[in-house]
Amino acid sequence: QVRLVESGGGLVQAGGSLRLSCAASGRTFSSYAMGWFRQAPGKEREFVSVITRSGRTYYADSVKGRFTISRDNAKNTVNLQMNSLNTEDTAVYYCAAKQWLESSSRARDPTEYDYWGQGTQVTVSS
Image 1 (spheres, rainbow, N blue to C red):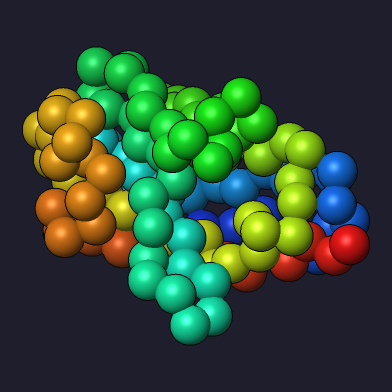
Image 2 (image 1 turned 180 degrees about the vertical axis):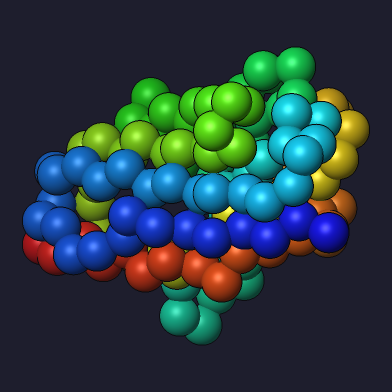
């Protein structure tokens, strides 16, 4: 069992930055792919980014070049640095975990993930 707790959300003006963090419980964190997804009101949950256990990173086209995902296996954390935020980034952001996942296509599918955090709200004002 893995418990995920997100933090770092908030209100920011367009063009600003936020850093989200996800703290994971458990002793096998390094074996998990850690993903970030988001869900805006009235929309489906969508893929944002993932970092696999081997360190491969993948990003949605909408955030590529603006967001950076990283992990610290010693601290059981994964971070999402979000720069140049715009109003379309407004959503609840969720951290998710899936053990042994490396495939880019599968990592973008929210149904692949076994564990989810409770989410953190990110609001970007114009």
